[in-house]
Structure formats: structure tokens, C-alpha cells
Length: 191
Image (spheres, helix red, strand yellow):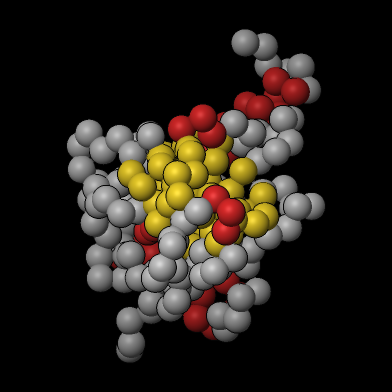
């Protein structure tokens, strides 16, 4: 049976992060005048995403995303090439108009649980050593991207073989953050 390809950054095995990794420069795929984004923070909650909205590099079934505090992200070169893909979406995906790579995603709604975070694509990092993806979110959504339902067992098996736990929502830790936010907003939880 042929190996199920998930994402070029993990298909040959998941690389472990380096202790002390504290940020990097993200670079789009343009061969000239690439967009560059400085990230002055470790990459948090690195994961794969099966949704059809996130940018995926060539040959990827899943996208790869990590979160960083929004004040730790700054466009340093060719900001003029960035455009929000869909301003009505919950996530404002800032894509390069040259190559199409999504450089970062913001959450403009101040009431949203992830407001204050920016989602980045670690594989665009110029520097190695970021924390590896530890889970896959919205795994069933790859069906909406064209993966036959009959292949889902192989997809989940390959993710587990790579040490990436598959979920059809977020990881338990992120779901706890979502539930805490909702409980505070409802007045059920204080502090």
C-alpha cells in the first residue's frame, strides 16, 4: 500500500523542535521580492488543519498552522503585496498577491476566543527548529477538499504513525481554552 502524503513538512517524518526557539522570519514563495514577516515568539499550538480555507503548499492534504501573540508579528518586506482573501471570514487570511501563500491570519473580532493571536504557517519559516505539529484539526474536512471517504482510515492511521493525533475539532487543550472563553462570556466562570 502506498504511503499517504499529509504535508511535505511531515511526510518524511516529524522533525523535533529546538530548545530555545524564539521566532523566525516567514518568507512567501515568490522568487523575487518575497513578502517577509518577522515572528518574535515561539510557535504555539502547531497543528495540521484539514479545512478547505487554509493555504496548503503544493502536494499537501493538510495545512500547517501555529499561533503567536498578535503583537509579535510584523511585516518587514513587501507589505504592499499582501491582501486579505475574504474580509467577511472569521479569520482574515493575509495572502501574497504574487504566489498566493497565506503569510498570516488575524482574528479581527475582539469577542472571538482567538482574538489577540495570529495564525502563521510554520513551513514558511526561514529558520528551522520550531515546535512540530502535535495534532490535526478538522480531519474529516479533507473530504470536502476531494479526499475520498474510503481513504480516511488510511489518513488517520498515517497521522497517528507520525505522532499527530487526529481530531475533528481542536486538541483538548485548545478546546479547554474555547470552553473557558465561552463560560466567562456567559458569566458561568469568573476570573
